[in-house]
Amino acid sequence: MNTPEVGPLWREVLGDAEPLRRGREAVILLSILILLGEVVMVFAALMSGDPRNFFVELLTAWFVALLLYFVWIGQTWARWLLAPIFLVQGCWDFIWGIIGGDGLRSVIGIGELIIFAYLAISPSVYAFARLQRERIGRWEVLAISGVFLLVLASVGAGILAFYNYQDTLKTEATEFMRMTFHRVFENRDPEYLAEHSKKAHRSLSPQTFVNRISSELGNVKEVGPVGTSFRIKFVPYHLELHATGKARVIFETAPMWVSIEISGREPDWEIDHISWDY
Image (tube, rainbow, N blue to C red):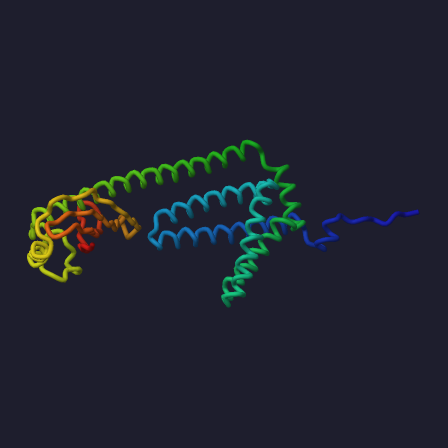
């Protein structure tokens, strides 16, 4: 008695399509889509001018690229680390896209759910991953992992250099604001004010402004410590800093809170605005 020939399980699930080819194509396509999304996020963070968001997105892109490499060599844990992220993000974008009437966000949510389905439950991706685990050698994995570590070290060195430079900028900006408090409110120096104030923001001439300080506030008796806040952003070819210094100044008339806003880059700091209030 002849027993019926039983075909492979993948043929029953996928028909006549070769699962390994389908799995390879799926992993390549998913990797391209995910990496393109990360490139868009990094570029958007760069255009926003916020250095912190840029570096966070850059590290996120590096981590995603590393996980996609482990997906490519057939590591199941990497797929199960990525898949829940796309499940949660896809549900979030799809639901809020419908609630907010944002069709693009809903479409992105559907795309993220499709990526989750391929990463988590696609038989062809599983078959390709199993083959890759058998085919990829240990030395190849170590070599590629070493390249990723070198890239991470380079990014980390760049971030460290940026934050050191940022601290230098903040120190120099703070010294400039302290000098401005001294030269404008204590020395009443209109030439210093004319040299360092931003031309577009002038509502009074420097001499008129100094005369107003003398008539309304009188002489300075004491200047308290200068509290500062900073905002740094990327602009073409350099970093631009915006800072506000605030100090409690005791004048002859009354104690006042004096604020000085500056912007620019060292050594070309410019005074944007000076104000005082009770």
